[in-house]
Image (tube, rainbow over all chains, first blue to last red; front, side, top):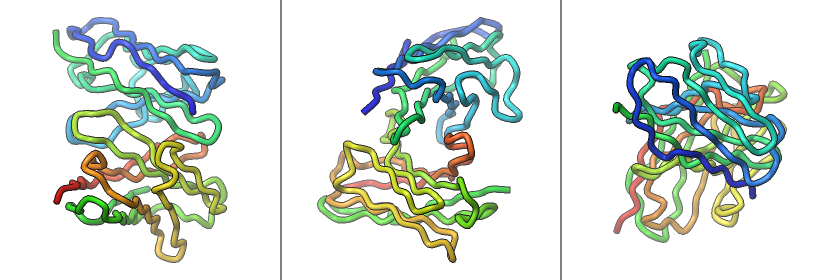
Length: 107
Length: 119
């Protein structure tokens, strides 16, 4: 079973900051990597699929990169609406494993 | 417009079987590539993928819970049913169903339903 590990678990940042979250897979997942945003009490929202493809309607300040086992989500200039928890997910093979999440909070 | 909604008991006792229903609209299992998955989230914890059923009835399960899970679909009713046997307090969570898009990701989610396991 493929394990996904995110870092950091919590990140304190200010509006306007550049934010980077890392996700590592226990084995190569090629480009089968997605990112979700979740706000308290709400269902997750798909942001990025296939490592770097933005879902329709997602602001261009979000970007993704990486390949194989190491991936990153970058928010180029953090906005008030971006304070949330972010999850990576691998969707290759026969499973859909999520990372443990990274909470982006106000510094 | 795709929508999904979960329904089922809010409280179950330990050792009981949980049955949850996901009722959806805006797509059909008659179309190839379609799928519906279940994901849960214990309070304050991470998302945990449980199961997935495809348009052709192919079923995938989380390896850690495979022995306790069953996923089925009713194409005529636009429903997907998840059962989880031998419930334990550690199964207390919000349970979500979600639409599997052509990319293989969960692009549309239901609102979630909270299930508490307690005697």
